[in-house]
Image (tube, rainbow, N blue to C red; front, top):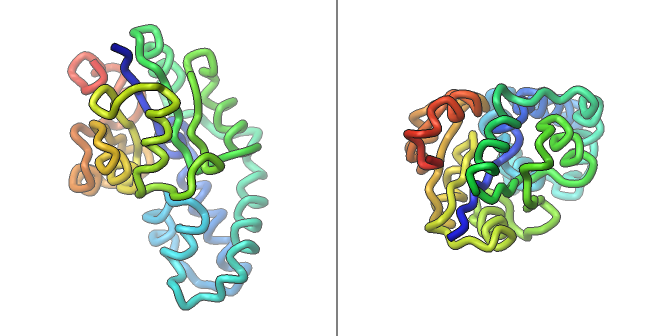
Length: 218
């Protein structure tokens, strides 16, 4: 039977979390909101609408959500030509693909942002499909992004592993019924990832690749 390895992208395969923190912080600042960077960091991994709601609350002026998202997108877009892949990201995907795993990305990114991330990873030959923000009605921590990735792979949950860097990833994967692997390169503590459902936690893609034989992706 086929097996699917589903990967988050930001903070898992590409070193972008802190770029998101700074550009969201600046977008909020421009709109007159003082949001601490540590709070933004903990919210990274949520889709734009959910991130804004999480940080500003339900009593905010929701009519300005679009402006905030657009400001973040414009600020973050300045980095599209130099997004850095995390160590071992492309090599890990190729190794798994060569071992018979179907590789699907599950990300809140879409459009030109997703294109920039895929160029950074530089492993399109190993990636079968992508479940992007445009394909789902609810983002992580809802299970829909992971469930859609499984549909694209044609693999049941018990034949899949989800790799991510945030508690939102681990919660989404757990709700979807897949085994979850965490990585620390997004800046979230090991204990938080384990509490949210991570079966094992690695430093980054290179660490997972080096210890692949003893991992859920063996």
